[in-house]
Amino acid sequence: MIFGNINYSKTNEALTEDIKRCFKYAKENDLIGFEKGTHEIDGENLFVNIVEYDTTVKEERFWEAHKKYLDVHLMLDGEEKIALNFIDNLKQNEYQEEGDFLPLDGEAVNSEVILRKGDFLVCYPEDAHMTAL
Image (tube, rainbow, N blue to C red; front, side, top):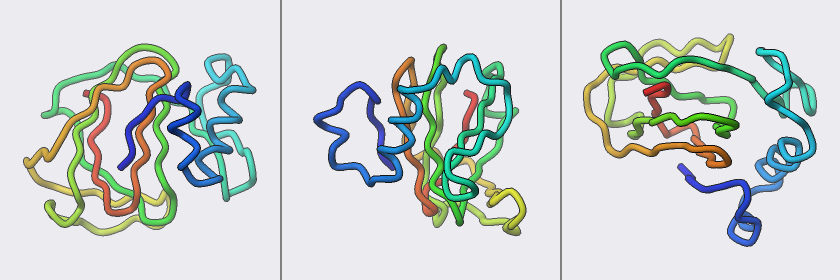
């Protein structure tokens, strides 16, 4: 997991080229004006999912992870808490290849972050996350 802010360019120099491409795209495009849904940047290699939702309580949410893609969360507006853990600390359910979705079960929260405008969270395949809190 990597937690940071898109505006800290000096710190973000250490990120992979694909993550930097995501941030470059976000800075060059008015993502808030995009329709909700998936927008390709580089085919299936790099794309952005625009979502909007109301936050809720942990009991209403679920753990997830992804095996094929990195999951880069970038807060465009508002505030969201995301619970974090490692997939090995949770019960892994059947992986759903379509949608690259690994559902997990468990109560343990290893850490939490609060994303505010400009903040990002990069989740790798071993990183479980519970969004919309």
